[in-house]
Length: 393
Ligand SMILES: NC(=O)C1=CN([C@@H]2O[C@H](COP(=O)(O)OP(=O)(O)OC[C@H]3O[C@@H](n4cnc5c(N)ncnc54)[C@H](OP(=O)(O)O)[C@@H]3O)[C@@H](O)[C@H]2O)C=CC1
Image 1 (spheres, rainbow, N blue to C red):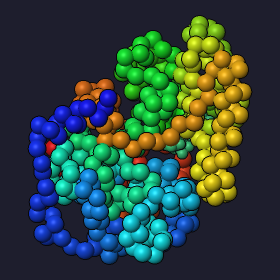
Image 2: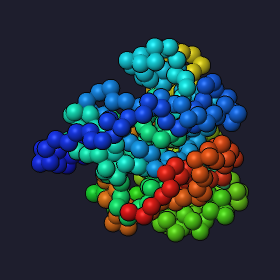
Image 3: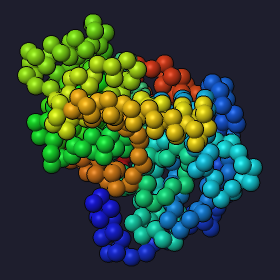
C-alpha cells in the first residue's frame, strides 16, 4: 500500500538522470572507517575512502549533510552481526578482497541526491532526502553514500538536516515493530493501550509520538529524570523503573488507573522483562508483546549462518507457542529500511505530529566522541553528527 504513491508520482514525473556529479567525479572522499572490529580506537578518519558508485539502475548517490550514531553502530564496531552482514555485503565482490573492510558505520542520513541510476524516476539530483541505511551497506559517516531508491525518501521540509538525521533509523524500527509486527496503525489505534518499556532513548521517543498521534493511550517506563521528556512527547502514564520493581508498579497502575490490560507492549530493554511483561497483556484479544532485543544476530555470529538461524527458529518457536497457550502473542521485532515508510513519517513530521529529539550534535571531526556518548548509554533521544554545515531549508 505504501508503494502506491511512489508509482503514481513516478509515472507522472517521467525520467530523471544524473547531472553534474558524474562529470565532476572524484574517486575518493572523506570518511570515518574501521579496518578491524574493536573499541573506539578502531575508528579511523581518512580522506581516501573509495567514493561510492552506482552499481544497479535503481540506486542513488546521496551527499551526506548529517548522520547519527545508534547503539547498533557501537555493536557493529565490535563485530556484531558480521556473519549475517557479510552474506549481503559486496554482492558483486567489487573490492575483490571478500572483506567487509574498510567499513563505514552510520545508519541514518539526511542529505542531497547527487546522482540517480537509470531506473530512478522518483528522485532527481538536488532533492533533499533522508534514509535509514541497511546494516549490510556502507554507512553515512562519510561524504557520500549509495542507496537503493526505495530506501530513500524526501526529507520533511520543516526540519534542518541535523534534526532530520535523528529520525530515519529509529522511525523505521518503530514503524516495523508497531505496524508490521504489532498490527497497530493510524486507523485502528484509537483507545488502544500501549506500553513502551524504555521510552527515553531513540526508538522509544519516536514510538511514543507515533502511537500517541494515532490516538493510543501510552504508558512508558523510563528513569525519573526522563519523565518530563516522555510526557512532553505524549506519554499518558510514566513509571520510573529506578523507583522499585517495575512489574509491581505496572500491575498497580493497571488495577488502580488503567482498569485494563495492554494491547501492545514494545520492549526496548530485553533481558528479564519478557519474564513478566506478557502477563500485562489482554489475553485472547490479539494482544502482542514485541521485543527489539533478540538473540538473532548473536546466534549467527556464534554458530554461523545456518546453525544460528536454526537456533533462532527453535528459540522463537518455543516462546511463541508457550505464550499462545496463554492467549497472547510473543514476537521479535527488527529494523526494516523503507523509503515509503519514511514518506509516511515525513508527513507526520511536517504535520507537527512527530518531532526530532536531538540530545547532542557532534561535528564530523568528533565522530569518536559521538560513539563514546552513545556507548555511555542513558540516551535522551538521539546523538547526531553534522557533516556539511547545516542550513535551514
Ligand atoms: N532488533 C532491531 O532491529 C533493533 C534493535 N534495537 C535495540 O533496541 C534497544 C533500544 O534502542 P534505542 O532506543 O536506539 O537505544 P537507546 O540507547 O537510544 O535508548 C535506551 C533507553 O533505555 C533507557 N533504559 C535503560 N534501562 C532501562 C530500563 N530497565 N527500563 C526503562 N528504560 C531503560 C535508557 O536510559 P536510562 O539508562 O538513563 O534509563 C535509554 O534512554 C537497543 O537495545 C537496540 O540495540 C534498536 C533498533 C533496531
